[in-house]
Structure formats: structure tokens, C-alpha cells
Length: 383
Image (spheres, rainbow, N blue to C red):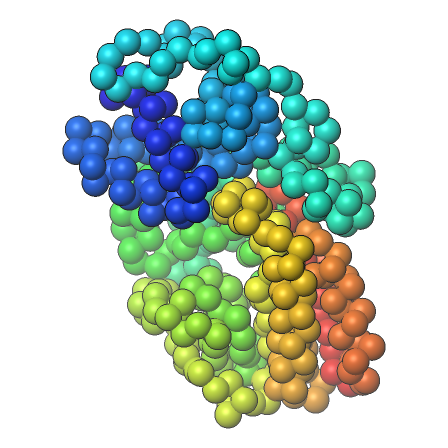
């Protein structure tokens, strides 16, 4: 496919997304109908779509409107591209820009691709880092691997990956983190991945686990386990008795094969209270996802004040449920991939006000300015 044809395809996919269809579903539907498109074309169209979603507000301003065409036109103008290669004649090429598609230069929060209603809360949470963090959230997230300490050293894993055409460099945020610099699309088909030497995991997620007070012999519950990334990262740090729970059990469907690949034992449970108490409970709670907007840009535009209020209420319920399962002198670790104080510091303050006999022994914030997603962690100790 020529660049113009890729642009036209991305426009069509984005129109479906703007109409309410999830981006992955829209891309799959386009791919099934575009038998002429090779893997390189599909990857290029995908990249255009997600770049446009990350920068939806500013690209719409630059492109003259919130449409698939407007977003891709805005993307081209933002990158200073030669417009002639993206438009022209032919069956698959979009028409050249019209006079009413001149667009305008975005300003302020619009240029940072921040929804107006969220800007005050983000400024409160981030302070002087507001603009640089929001600018970072407009960029594609790096691909980071976690080396399984039970299977390899970081240097040995780097050598294995390099032999398979995957170049990496140590990431400063976590001891076993490797950022992929070349060969990203080879990772999941590599032998190192298949044999459990490495797992895909954001650097901030790894840093959260490294901050947990884990020791051999502890009974540990990952209460909101999802796919089990943090469960497996905890297993690599110490010899633990591990349980994993999620409100939607199907999210954990991949955890047993992943655990087997990593050589660790994890018990999946729908009734975590039945095996309580635990020395440590990790509650990586459902949240706005504002810290991971680079990976899920649709979430930025789908979030509403009403949904945020629902999430804050749910987080409080999860904290109270988890607290009841923590052993005396145990730890409740509360984490979110959010920047917002409502979901983080304010949530911890409200928990301590509701629950006597608990103290906060530490809080950590991890930022895209450190090379990972935005994450918050609070360690709560039971007297």
C-alpha cells in the first residue's frame, strides 16, 4: 500500500471508532476486508490510528474537524509531512484538503490533548509536572520487558534476546526491566518469551512490585489480578504462597499458562476470604487509567465525571474488603495506574479515617517522566 492508501484506511477505521466501535475491533474488521494489505501495511495503519487517538484533540484542531479524515490530516500537519504523498489520485487515495479543512493551531489543554473537565484535577495532582507529563502521554509508550529472576540474570536475558534480533537496554526504574530498542514485533514469538525468561510488563508496574515488602514464606493475595503480571512479578521476588483473584475471573484465563511458563505456582480463587488471612494483599484497583493513556488512548476520551465517581466509590469498597483479609501486622498495598488525587492520596486519607488501627507507611508515585506509566502505590500497615 502507498502512504495515501494507508492514510485512507486509517481515516475509515477512525470514523468507526468515533462512532463508538472499539479501535481493536475496527482494525480487525478493516484487516479482514483488506486482503491486499500486508503485515507492514496493517502495522502502519494501526500506528496511524493509535497516534491519532492519543492526540485526538490537537489533531482535530489541526485537521479541521473531529472526523477520521480530520484526525489524519491533523497528524500529517503535526509531523510536518509533505502533504502530496498522502493525497492524490487513485482508487485508494483520499482527496486533497479542501479550503474549509485548513485547521488551526491548538492551544493550552487542547494542545496537550487533555479533556477540559479533567485539566484542573490533573494540575492539582501533577503540579509543575502537568505540562511535561501530559506531553509525554501524547507519545507512544516504550515496550518494556521484565526478566524473570528465577530463570535468568538481566545480562543473560539481554544476550538471548539479541541473538533473536531483539535489542534492549536496562531501564533505570526497576532492577529487572529491559526496554526494547529494536525488534519489538519479534518479542512474543521469541524463545526467551516462550520459555518464561522474559514477560511484557511496564517499568512502573515492575517498580510497584519492587516496593512491596515481600519475603520468603509469606501468604500473598493479588486481589485485582487481571492478567497476572504483578502476580508473576511477586513470585519472581520471593518464595511465596500466592493466590490471585479478580472480580471477572475470565481476565485471569491466561494466568495459569503464564505461571507454568515462568515456573511458579499460583492458586486462582473466586472466594479469597476462604483462605484469609494474608501477610500481604495487593489491591491494584480499577481506576481511571489516566496513567496508562499512552497504551489506552480511548480511555481518555471515554472517561466521564460520573464514571470517575463510580470508580472512586468502588476503590473504597475494595480497600475495605481487602483490609478485612490482612493478618495482624500485615500489609495492604493499594495501587492505581492513575494520576488523580481523588483515586490516590484522597482515597488513602478516606480509608484511614474509616479504619482505626491502620497507618500509611509509605506512598510512591511513578511518572512517564521516569520512562514508565503513571502509577501510585500506598503501603498500609495493620497494627
